[in-house]
Image (cartoon, rainbow, N blue to C red; front, side, top):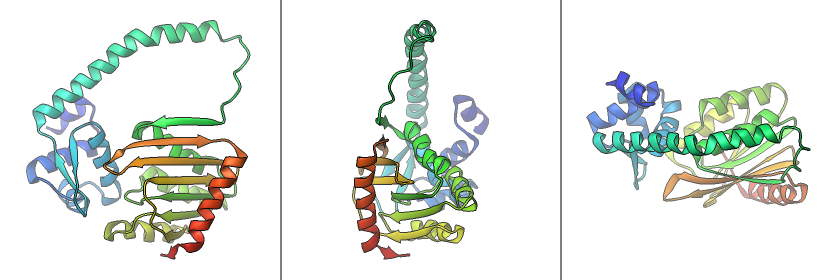
Length: 249
C-alpha cells in the first residue's frame, strides 16, 4: 500500500503515518510516531502536511489528536486537486511564460517592501529564509508545536557561524517542552510567554516576518515579509518587550 500511496504523491513518511492512522484510529503525535516508525522529530511536520493534503483531520483535543480521512474521500479529493492544478497550469502558465520572455529586456521593477504569502507550502520557505540570511541574530516567536528537521539544521549552522538565536515559545505543553529543551541544547536561548494568533520574527534588525495563524486550523496561516526598517523596529520592540516578561525555560 505504501508504494501505491507514493505513486499518488505522498512521501515515504506520509504513507507510513496515514496507514498507521487507518489501522490504529485516532492518535496523538507520540503514538503516531511509535506505531508508524516515523521519527518523533518529524512526525508533526508529516501530520500537518497530510492535513493540508486532506488525508488527515486534526481533532480539537489536548494533546492534539489526528485521524485518517476515509480512503475513498481522501484519494478522490487528492486526485481532483491534482487534476485541477494541472488544468489551471495548462491555461495560465504558457501566457505567463510568453509574457516573461517578451519583457526580459525591460528595466527591473521596484522591489516591494511588504510581501504576503498564504498557506503552509508558501510560508515554509519564509520561515527558513531568516536563518539562511542572518549574520548577527534571529529573534523568533512561534508555538513550538513542531520544528522541521530542515529548520534545526539551519539553526545549527547559524550558531556555528556565531549568529545568536532567541526563540520565544507562545505555547507550553508536555510535548513541546521537549523541543524547547532540544533547542536549548543546540545553544538557542529559549523563553515562554503566552501569545495568541500572532507570530513574528526579526533578522538582524533589518528584516522582519509576521505570521497570523488560524487557531481552528493550524495549516491556515498568512506570512508577511517586511523589508521596512521602521516596521521592523516596531516589531522588534514588541518582541523585546515580551522577551523581558517571558519565563525562562
